[in-house]
Image (cartoon, rainbow over all chains, first blue to last red; front, side):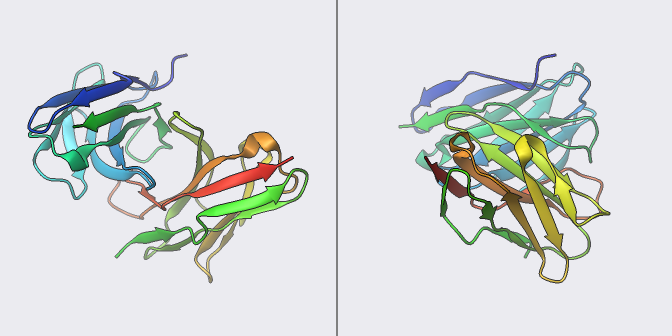
Length: 112
Length: 115
């Protein structure tokens, strides 16, 4: 049984570009959340998707957007990249909106 | 504001000795409490959680955590540390109500277990 998988593993972009990160949830899970982990900090909640809709959002600008597909997989999109967007982006899935979350290995984004 | 504090950036312990990683939280009501571990270049691995009931929660790899409501603390413990326990540990809380999964994390504590 595959756990939460994220792609790509690493990504390098330049300021102003756009990026898309992908996540496949653990089998049987229908809820996906995204977190940003800056260097030396704990993960910060970006948003959560359930039933293909954004259900809750953290304190992140509209440059951060997402999508959930009918198979429960999800994408995180970041527009107009800033140097400060450099971080490890973690995807977490759960069986429902309040179940225990399981995390993927993350995508490390470097913005130059 | 809702927050989680991990007062120690790093904890050093000798192999075989007991370890404690501290966590306090500031969340109204009765939150769910979690501990996760992160190894280099890896995502977060779930260790244990407290929802209700016995204040001592047992989790993976011999870890346990003690919930103290009056002190709003949820300290992670292990009776005998292993070198392989060396990693970054995160305490997290899920605020009550709302029906959503949002986790609020502490800044993390690096555990170093020396042979």
